[in-house]
Image (cartoon, rainbow, N blue to C red; front, side):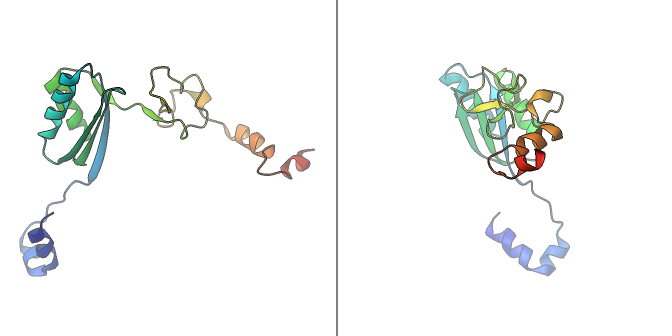
Length: 157
């Protein structure tokens, strides 16, 4: 946003005559793309940097991760552009830090291909792994015998 835009928003007479256009908010798009060499990294970076609204591109070849930040209206458009320009398979970043998942070593959440400290995002997909989420009865029993609440065990007995 430039200085003229800021001034035009302060002046009511100018703002009422001109149609105000909503700008997209700052957004981060994380993708998983197979990166084999520095040439692949350069092609991905070049494909995304040319887009309108993109402010930053971060490519991590060891994790096969591409992070794009900017004022992007449609995240799918960024992914389609990378797929079209590079000819590679692009998918949304499927991993989250293992601290976010209640049971990170459940069969649906644990993934050998995940980078260190990450597991599959089973919180967003309820059909992925029912074992990765604790039911209400499990939470009730585990909290009854936890160290945080020493008097709860006396009420059960």
